[in-house]
Length: 436
Length: 164
Image (tube, rainbow over all chains, first blue to last red; front, side, top):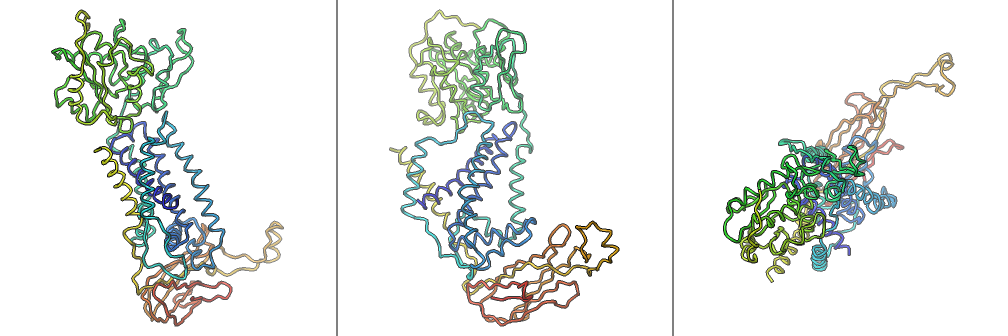
């Protein structure tokens, strides 16, 4: 159990680092996502502190080294009247109260702050993913159990403050800073740590600045259905009492400071339908940078070049690797901000108006999505499990999706499209009008 | 089958990284013949001026709860410390008094790595701002074993350095 605890805590550092690198490299830390980014930084400090206090509790030679070096580091902060490191001069200077304090910090104090910090970290997200998939959890647990059995974590020699440890096995995940404190100096280490932390915290505001136009509500087309509120991954939409005198009780209100302009709200809007007679096509909630009318025009333009009886129109997210792959392959496709931006009536429109024989949706899955939940809500909509649902008149064989983490996705998107093309049923009945 | 094999390799690599870097490489703090000397104490230096006894008239002007017979300046001198091993200077520091009003104790803390052996250890402190003269000093022959942590402190009651 102790080995498992030790390796799991090391794994936490690795996964936190991977999480940080992923959000940075995916450019999902700037703009209105700054809050989640900067609230992650105190969590890193808390996790490191939690791990370090855990090493103190063992009170072996490593704990002795950690205690003395930590005290030397803390002494560098000019807020203590007495030297903290002086508490570790000899064994007589140490009392059980010290270990009671450390146990309290490790078992109660820091975990409480950590839980509160995690709550704050995901505060602006709706449906935050806290737990990893069960299979991943089971696999990781099994792998760590095997590691714990093969290489059990053991204590080092008992601490003796009359002696100076000469060498030790260091946990480099948590304690890499400690040798630095000796090689450089405690002051330089603080400068380094605070400097790096500050740089990470201000990263969202460093050039190139991310500017987005938040979604806008068109009240005359908003019926207050609340679907956009339910689907928004960033809790950026609220329902408020109606302000325009229409018969509906509520209206959607976008909070610009929270909106990341993914457009998933547009995909949820029942008025975002290309079948509507009213011109121009203006849904109740709209993404100014890529309006629903523009998507409709792009669809029609892209399908105009399609020939044969196995015509496929694909949808891909803007700027994604999938989009680049489709472009290079010369496939007919439409770029949307996020897959969740496209409401199912658009797929219905393409198929029932005979613009194409099949619709293919290609995007990254939830964990690699530039936004959040885009593929999840789209999948649920086309499976008719979430509003707005794909109409039943659409043959399920004519619409396919390849999310990057789904087991069906095993290779290039173009190969997936070709496989889908070959699996298409006979062409739709002639006589359905194509309408622009 | 390939999927399972790939997962085994991926999980294996992950825990291998954890297993390896949680204990390796060893960190060498000291060579086998080295030891540590820890010099640490907190000491309030002398005040920068003499205390002055207030006259009865001056005391009468004060509120009853503030009638202390002596008026002393708050600020203290810096503490200067030197440590020599066989006449070789291994540490010299001037520590300011702590506190916003510079009226607190000066803190000295230093760990010095030194080869094991027999040394004539000298430690001297000046806390009165009186130039080069030491107000407190101690010289002692000590034998330092490899891997030992020799502690040097200042006993505030006995007003003397303690080498142990």
